[in-house]
Amino acid sequence: MSDTAKLQVPGKEVEYPILKGSTGPDVVDIRKLYAQTGMFTYDPGFTSTASCESGLTFIDGDEGVLLHRGYPIGQLAEHSSFMEVSYLLLNGELPTQDELSSFTRTITRHTMLHEQLATFYRGFRRDAHPMAVMCGVAGALSAFYHDSTDITDPKQRMIASHRLIAKMPTIAAMAYKYSVGQPFLYPDNDLSYTGNFLRMTFGVPAEKYVVNPVVEKALDRIFILHADHEQNASTSTVRLAGSSGANPFACIAAGIACLWGPAHGGANEAALNMLHEIGRPERIPEFIARAKDKNDPFRLMGFGHRVYKNYDPRATVMQKTVREVFKELNVSDPVFDVALQLEEMALKDDYFIEKKLFPNVDFYSGVILSAIGFPTTMFTALFALARTVGWVAQWNEMISDPEQKIGRPRQLYTGPTQRDYVPVDNR
Image (tube, rainbow, N blue to C red; front, top):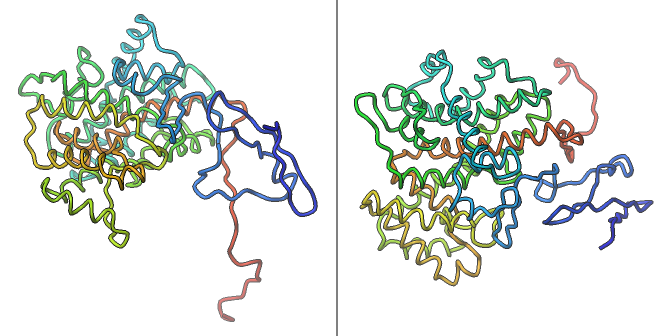
């Protein structure tokens, strides 16, 4: 392959360097395109545009590969913990035992929220969506922690990163407690990151909450599987907001707002709603037939993926986890029977195999979270909780990149050409 790419435009030919990453597609460096040709590229959704250089997460959608700092997601989900993966994403290497203990201790010490934020919660309607609450509270953190908003100071950036990772479970649990009219529970420093979140969500002051280790492990895996996913919409939003110099709390609030969209963070809720619509296992063939009918708007949610054209590597881990949770909690619900039988039938159906419509992580995570006891309104909030570590790692990487500039996409203008103003009386 040539080291340059040639582009022919009216009147001349120009060359652009081809840059190679450590793996994945090469990229054509078009930074001088406008200066040399007076043209922009047109790429709606930026589906063929690399907006940054990153060493965090690699995805090969055709092969079904997801790597965090080079480590396969399946290995991390099976053998690691969310705290260990968080350290890996932030620092680039897996921690030693001492490093992991120190990091976990730091996160644990930052889990409490400023007491005045409890009053802030009471400003929301009781039936407010948890994502509305999380978006508002995350942005409000910058009003309480002024000592970690100087983005030019690496120490302050790391303190802000630790605070966001630590406080997001508390923020999410308080959003849930507020919606159901139960008192907030303070964090318990004797519990793990995930165990503490379960207690703050489902515990009550009147009795001791005992963390179920199977549930704790399942939720920890879900957090790992959602920790980062390359330059998706919410991550790109965090980077775009951060490129202006906005403080980290505002950037993460922007990410939460983007994640709230049903095309992004709401997919597992949509998959569970579909299972409820099917209702009973005997109705599965009817809905599979509808999914194959081009004239029927019905779609099987939780199957296929925008990036993965092979089996979603995160779904492989969830296949095992969903069965562990069902067995431990002695789940008896037609919806869960529908999920397991739909998965089995779709994986054997030639139509789905040919079109590579495999179950993705959203198909499994929704049924697991529902089995644990989370309402569907909390699903995206849990996604935001887990993705916070990816967002802050991406934000830190962007701030440290000397080539990063303020985000400023261009456009293909199709509106009116210049025209003169006419006074209102003459129109």
